[in-house]
Length: 439
Image (cartoon, rainbow, N blue to C red; front, side, top):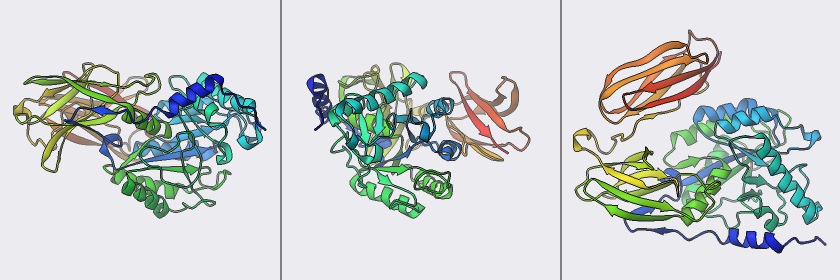
């Protein structure tokens, strides 16, 4: 019979499982069930750190601008010890590094004290090696749940593999369902992947895929990179329906969405001030949630800042109502909706309201790629390409442009393979991103 450690852990777990469903939102506002008001969430989780997860899957997800989750075992020599430099690079590109315990031992075979060591020390290993990021979720070895009270004291979510689509709020954050993919699972082809994701739209739910090997790299139940590419291409082409992000970011969003308070504290002719708050730990729950407000009658459009900084904003027309839609992080400063000067409105339904420089697509690329960027009003724009030594390689844009969203193509035929930086500058904006050119 297992010993139960329930003194302080019981209190922590009780508070955690009671955290949902305290949302309070002023009547003019709506909160997106999913980020960007998408109709479903999709997460790809990879277990055991097989070789082509890093050489094939991660670059493929980078190309489409999607984040995945890598669940690693930290102290099992038989499975190979983690390559921390490679994992750090993945984390810096937005991917989640999560815990798959120290030794990949089934919880069914462990006492509570040993389970605590497996959960606690694996998280500590990851946090001590991966800087700038926190380990917040875990995957149960062999999909066997252990003591959920212990698990909840270290993680905000845990994954099993019961094969179901989760509802918009999981029934149990310590036993979140996933679907086994590859040769040993029910999802083998791109049609299978797409069918499961489509079923999540019907319920506005969350589809979590569980993968191991890629292209016969020795991992269990492999899936081919061609199937992954076809699936990601479909999700990319239907971004209004699918929000694809890491397991941990989806858990963060759900908890913040359910706990958020949106309060309008001031409305003037030129601006509206809003407070977006929650009672969660800001060091962990810091993902932007999607909010929209119906426009006042005399406003054509608006742009949004939080704590004085521009945030992603767009105008949306739905059922005859015009909304300003934006992303805001709870407890990250006042949100202000600014009335936009009508002289800048060319096409309010598609008008960009903030500067932006998007990641090139595809990335990595050979030989051509496309960069999209936005300017909110007429001004001079330059976009220049540099090597990692800071030397100018090519000027892509250098001219006055009107407000709008633009694309510029780059032919890399004359470039050497490697990493490059591209920088956009205007009179009031500067941003730099990087891409990889391969041969």
